[in-house]
Amino acid sequence: MTTFTLRQLLLLLITLFMLSLISFNVSFLADHGQQSNIEKVNTYLIYLNKLLQGDFGISNINNQPIREQLRIAFPATMELCVLAFSLALLIGIPLGIIAGMTRGKWTDITINFLTLVGFSIPSFWLALLLMLFFSLQLGWLPISGRFDLLYQVERVTGLALIDTWLSQSPYRKEMMISVMQHMLLPITTLAITPTTEVIRLMKTSTDEIIRQNYIKAAATRGLSRLTIIRRHLLHNALPPIIPKLGLQFSAMLTLAMITEIVFNWPGLGNWLLEAIRQRDYDAISTGVFVIGALVVVINVMCDILSMMMTPLKRKEWYAIR
Image (tube, rainbow, N blue to C red; front, top):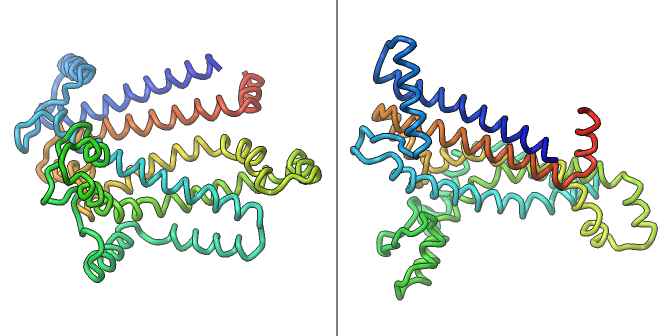
């Protein structure tokens, strides 16, 4: 297990190094033009030293440090992604288990149909439909933004729910309700596609596990279906799909950028779009590096977690070595 972890960490370092090269080319070569090889190496070493110190440069748009802009945009995107992915897991895992245990029955067919419909709907189109119906037609939810302009939420962590909870305002309850109302449509839009993928992955894994002899033996002993699911099925069906769930979370970052633009959410998507419009190459290169690094770190962590939770997978890996 230690060898596998070290190999994954080495892969992480190599990938981050490649990302730093890409980020460097986007930022510095756009400003410096043609340089000799020695000048490029020296410039890259200076850039890498600043990168390790968390110095991403100064934005050309407003002359603010890019690090300060990231402190605002990054938590907003991560809060949206984490909440949407949690919702996808809460809905997708139970539905996937039901579909896998009732294969070929009406429940399985219904879940498959809903999954296909949810996967086929473009996220930007769904966002516009939800906005049109719930915001413009019914007037139940805010149309865009993250906070109500009536409330002043002091920024502590950059996470709207936590900052609102930590607020000392006498209107904290109203502020919390307002923040959740602003989040509801973006989270729902963002959670649809990963929910369909979680259902599909969980159904496939459940269908494979339920055919195993120990599941049949548990049913023969008279254990209830809920007990079988809780004691045997979940424990064996979840670990194999963890790396794939990491890929789904990574793909969600792309969907989050589209969702942020539609709902005017002040996250990485809006920030990068503005940087591209203004040709702010330092901000663009920083966005490329941060998003790429986040994707790689999440996938490496999921691989290590899957290996830790699956003894058979560890045995197979050592057998290959």
